[in-house]
Image 1 (tube, rainbow, N blue to C red):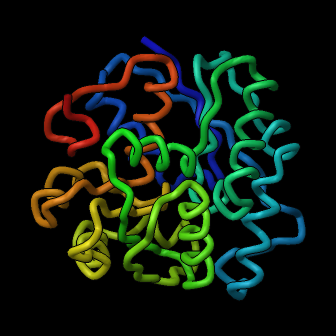
Image 2 (image 1 turned 90 degrees about the vertical axis):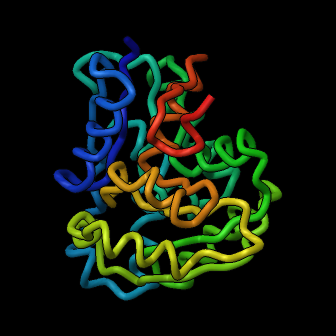
Length: 245
């Protein structure tokens, strides 16, 4: 089975959700993590104001910082920068540069969560979306701008303004479902939940059944896109429309 290498921003947040989804896709699928250190001047992310958080995630997504952190015990078959905000705050060209630098560093296909969203939307032929965002409204607007660069129209957003990814890792299924329902819109062809610290794998099918449209979570699109980059897009029942044939 392929070995997926994930660059991740904060240790002990949502890694178990990636592993849970990988186990549902194939118990033999290997997922390894490497961690990108926050800047020395950052301190506690949950104590930063919105502008400070925005700059912190931009700094974390510096291509040279990603390249230096991309150290895995075994070279993966594909690597992905598994952080939503840190891969869209530099815009579409910035996300492509991140992937390019990682690909050159490891000599394997390289992706990111934000690029995975674009690939998934193209696959589903969905060009109008709603955003169930955990970020401050300014960061949510930055994600909408990123999507617009790729021709995707955002018809509605909600912004939870959560304090940190570590706080988001504690959200239960009710709180995630509540955010998704608040963000839904009749004109949206898909709903996006862009945050890799959330534990969304157990909710994939239920959210789609409830809302009647594809629901693309950060964990799901990251793994789906990584496997697709290797030419083996996964097909599994019970995990939402993205994983159906």
